[in-house]
Image 1 (cartoon, helix red, strand yellow):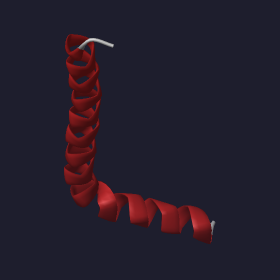
Image 2: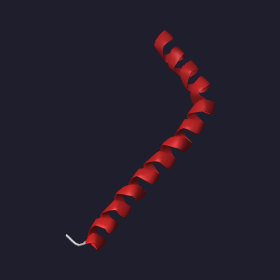
Image 3: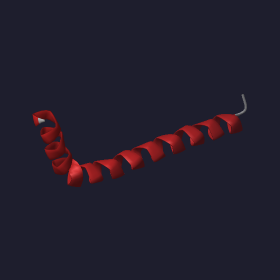
Length: 48
């Protein structure tokens, strides 16, 4: 294949990974704040 095609494929893969990592980072920030509430709700469900 042409080098331009390889560059385009690498850009697409890199963009997908960048979006995935940014979403995971944002989710981790939310999880740090909501982790306590989630743990408490899970404990209530397990106790029930």
